[in-house]
Image (cartoon, rainbow, N blue to C red; front, top):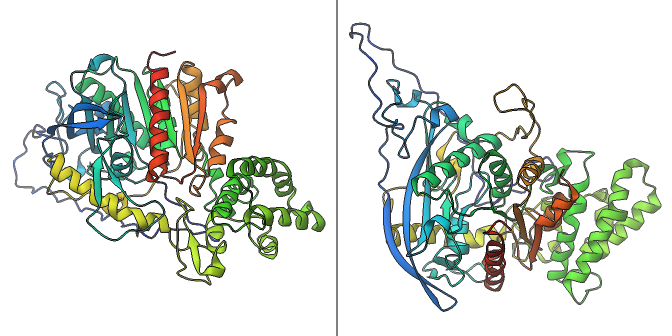
Length: 560
């Protein structure tokens, strides 16, 4: 799940995910009593000092396509340091290595930052572990736990909810997942630092883990530690990220120097935040976000039968809209104030035919409509708003005088079932952390302030004085860099036509603009479905997605 960015004109905030940023409290260090004799610093017993919940190992089986697969599940944590030198001194449990000669300060809050990262790993029993593919999976936000992928995609159990409907409250339905990926690969679901059951500790922990680059480094350290702990260095390796998990995958792939990946699965992609339609009005002069979102506007209007003339089929219609988006529409936007009134009128009328929005509304918007404005306007005359994460969903309009939609009907419909499912599953099936709070958002833990600055790879040797410049949040160079360094690595791009958080055409556009040799484009495959941001909410789409991912892994696990 990806959280929207606020803007003056389009502050489209998910009601279930929006939270007030809790300011961190400045801890006042206690003065050491002068009369206390000086003593050698105490040997560190643990970093952090809060005891970790012991790992829990359970066994189970899942039926996939008529095949019963026995598996071992391990729910636990691996602690990573805030820097590479610090990380090198720690064991998997966060305790200093015997020869590290590490001492902690008197107060735990002054200790170096560490993150205790929670994961659930599923290993097929009686399988050759050393050569079996392994998939590292995570959600996004940033600041979102991985309960969405864990209970929605490829684990042995999944939550079932009615598609496009907000069902009644509990009890919810949790079933054997016949679309589990365990028939072709082992899988590890990872909660990002400060989310789910992952926790951060120490001084400046927010700076150490909350940002494009710190987050990528934390996951890189986690994966290296995991490969060592479970002796999986020689396994075919895959990254699977959703939403903000897709820029994380790009950064992470570049960070994993000397670790060649067999493949990366990108679900609901955004690599350059200039392409976000949540609030492009804060970035005047960069107009491509409006054009890249147009096909999703059109798909949504088609689904809700709001077009002046209803095309019989979605995909041929979208191909037509895509050509207009990158052609006449983008040309008109680039002209700015030089666009003649006659041209503005003609483009507005064409946009009306593709979106159902009134011509006068489009003219007042200067042909530029954000995602939140579209959701608010499309069914305003019916008193309804449409979803952001999945625009097939709709709900009652909260404020008909608002310029943008004030909540997301899809998010409200599925958050409670998923929250229930992960907690019940952790407690009842995995026998883990029955006393712990599963954090639905990193903001709940405080000190969350995401740093969007990013240092691209390939600009000098790490630590050699090169590559010190910072750029905005555009990680397209990271993915291109890794594809150039590892030309055998394959990338699978997937998404939904009804996703307004990360419009599908945005992902296509980014892939076609990766700064790399043209021949490497053949390493990318595209898979789009009639669903939203979380394509797996729809059963038939999940079935097809599982098949596509399984085929992707089978075709790449030998490094072909």
